[in-house]
Image 1 (spheres, one colour):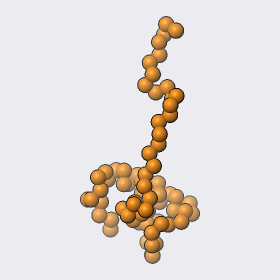
Image 2: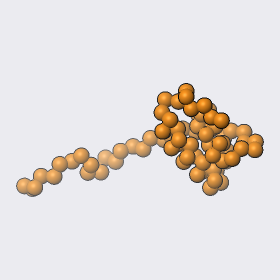
Image 3: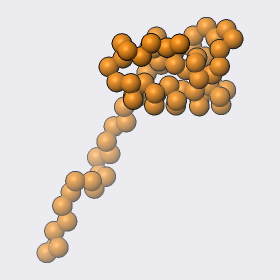
Image 4: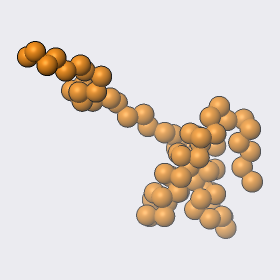
Length: 73
């Protein structure tokens, strides 16, 4: 069982491990010793040991989000 009490953000752990599990199911190579564990457990171990990390998406420069529309123009 994975001890998540030492994690700063359990939600981020679950999301990251879920994404990694999908990658493993699609054929990615595990970065930790697998043994007889399921792909989901392997993904959790990879996140705990920091063998994989979440990649932050950079905001788009011209996304238009947060810009006000001036009806006079």
